[in-house]
Length: 209
Image 1 (tube, one colour):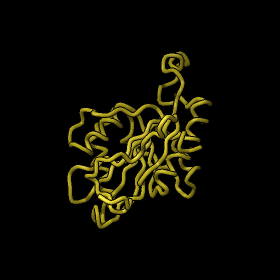
Image 2: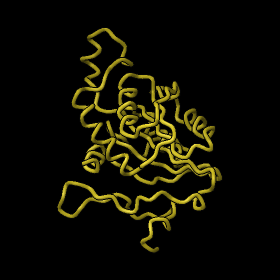
Image 3: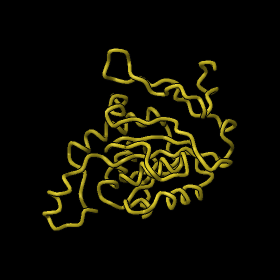
Image 4: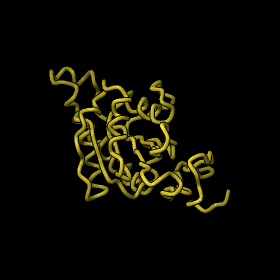
């Protein structure tokens, strides 16, 4: 296959993000979006983002407040702002940004929203941790016509969702650390999607420098 980014198909197994030789930073290669003719006119790109670093669950529980109110730490916000800059380098546009109602996810979504500008987070109850991935997948399928949808939520739901979109099985085959993200292309004509990229929080921050 040629080196023209637009000629890549979803079945191309070559790496999209790869480390520089002998360096800790990462360079982006061939990240041009697939053309509509490659995936169909109603293809959707799904960005799955785990919330930023939050405080200790055990320590927060001593406050007597529900875990849904546990916030992102100051360090988590700082790192997520850098990661969001990296995310925008990889994916320049987001058409719809949805978030779990939990505080740490909503805070993360607002950081992403400020980085992109012009997009406001929408709370989606389906993104609370105990909702099964097929429920979220059905919601996504109903969003046809939206080019890129970003979801901000929690593990293990997000890794289960990514796996379900790729295989129709909810048993996770990948894991998203806090602040990490992945992108999946979801064609209208197929039940399963294709993994475009998967980046750790550290990789996203490196791209955001």
